[in-house]
Amino acid sequence: MTTTESFADEAAASPNSPIVLLEDVGKSYGNINALRGVSLAVRQGEITCVLGDNGAGKSTLIKIIAGLHDYTSGRMSVNGEERHFSSPRESLDSGIATVYQDLALAPLMSVWRNFFLGNEITRGPFRQLDAAKMKRIAEEELTKMGISIPDLEQPVGKLSGGQRQCVAIARAIHFGAKVLILDEPTAALGVNQSGVVLKYIVKARDAGIGVIFITHNPHHAYLVGNHFVVLKLGRVALDTHRSQITLEQLTTEMAGGSELEALSHELREIDPGRVVDQPQGRDDE
Ligand SMILES: Nc1ncnc2c1ncn2[C@@H]1O[C@H](COP(=O)(O)OP(=O)(O)OP(=O)(O)O)[C@@H](O)[C@H]1O
Image 1 (tube, rainbow, N blue to C red):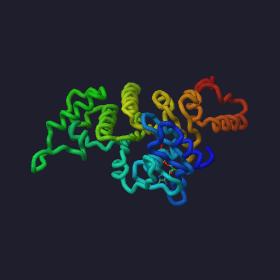
Image 2: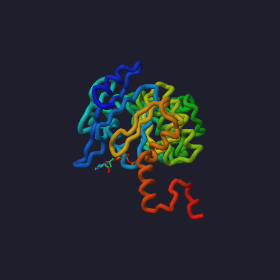
Image 3: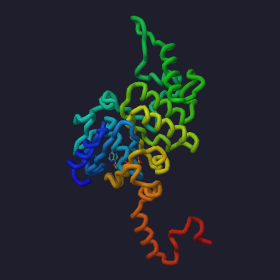
Image 4: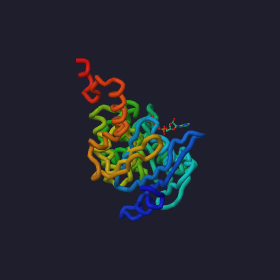
């Protein structure tokens, strides 16, 4: 993709037109260019995985879409309309929900209270909390997603990290998210819990949501993703669909790809006796 026009034309030509479209977006913090010329199309019913190493610009990208930062060049549109969000509320009101790794849940409050945090149901002229209704709806919604939490009265802080992510995903779906941004949802989890969260990411996709899955982990991305975007030093290094890439290629791309090869070559020149592509731990034998 070379020009903004061709990216937008191609995005619009697809039968499933993008709900969020970034064209040639840049973001600078003073003289640091955190993002340069980033184009990205997020479609409903697809999982778009954004991968990249530390400092690649992933957080900056989600902060722009989530309304925490404005971009400094290019164009972002939501449902075809150009947008510059000035607050997270504006992003949310446009149907974009963001679930951060350090979830904005109140750990001492019950699961059902957290489910409705900021969207409480009230009744009567004095707007009393309708606890029974909220509990019932929270239970129904979690069950619909296949999330089993036996006691919704327990503090959310007592749930496992995976369960907390799932509650946050179910909450976003219930409150009508059309786009769900997940910021490294599996980064702090073990294999089993990651599997549970990945399953709900697929359920969100199957509910018609456009999911943006931010991750360092190409294995997690490949298990669920339809579309892969790799950021490197603030630029898009790769933008491809699942049918066009294998897990091995994605892993190599994430591991540094050509940079690793160049490094391996340099190391050979410094230390010709060392076979750098031997498995670790074998070279001292
Ligand atoms: N508020 C800020 N002020 C100045 N520079 C920033 C700011 N936020 C990010 N940066 C810089 O922008 C670049 C991209 O950072 P960003 O946090 O978006 O990357 P990332 O891919 O999310 O990395 P990580 O996985 O480590 O969070 C980095 O060079 C970072 O130092």
